[in-house]
Length: 391
Figure 1 (tube, rainbow, N blue to C red):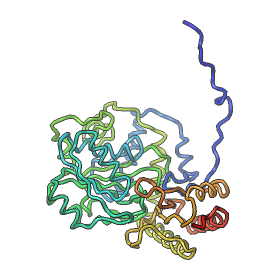
Figure 2 (tube, helix red, strand yellow):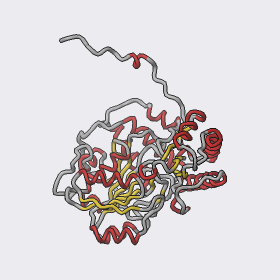
Figure 3 (cartoon, helix red, strand yellow):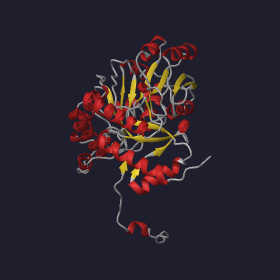
Figure 4 (spheres, one colour):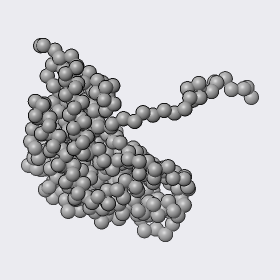
């Protein structure tokens, strides 16, 4: 056997250096010391009884956060995209009809995921910065007869908070499951899974929860489970197969758990701690804080002469604000200047809002009036120093 031909990389001989930065983009958020400390606990086996106890705590915390009593509640080992695929891959079989409500990039992503597994996909598209009426949704349900309707509650690409009331009833009228993405909204605005009739709900760890990216809480109603466990074919993904995941998380009522995958145990520690922080503050207090801070921020932006992308107040996402890109400025120059000068991240648009907006996320511990003042000062500074076209 020849000796190694690829030498040790010199870059790895240097110590790891990560700067502190104000994470005020659409995610991830800053992780507070308490949650960082929790994640630094010793690694133990992913099938040890202590881990199962932590997983049980996480399940209870998600049930509280989602306001659900669903037993099929757990966290996917992966980011929000993994939860999105878990929801779609388990509920949809090839040839079935899926309807995706597109009010930004996440409806587009859901449609592509469903297309990749052979579903017949139709979309209903909201105007930029707007939302769909229940009448328009019912018309599409009646026409396409989907098995699943996808909707992003908090659309982080456009800053839209989509109304949910009444949609589940329409879905169930047409024998359709209601799948909701709450990655950007969960914990920052009222949402009641059971009361609002949502069949599948998921979120991410890295937004309002302030945990590192990598775990994605998800829950399935009994109606969704009946559809999933009466499939004709196996889900296309072994990793995201609900039968296996239900057993690993102790959701299937079986006396023993089988090895499916190596759970990210340190990420579980962080997620548990972040759910504990939310429970200590209380959901209603968290909702109220995010809404008050967002209103304070919006008033500050308007006093500077900046315009909000979402015109209707009730449809503004309190966690991620979209600001119309100031006329005459290069949005990328603004975000680059703010990062370099203020060590603060805000971002441009994404998907349908690309080139049209600036996006500011103030989520979890980052949602405070002091942080609003910091962002407003950075924006004022950028508008004074960045190049403005006279055209």
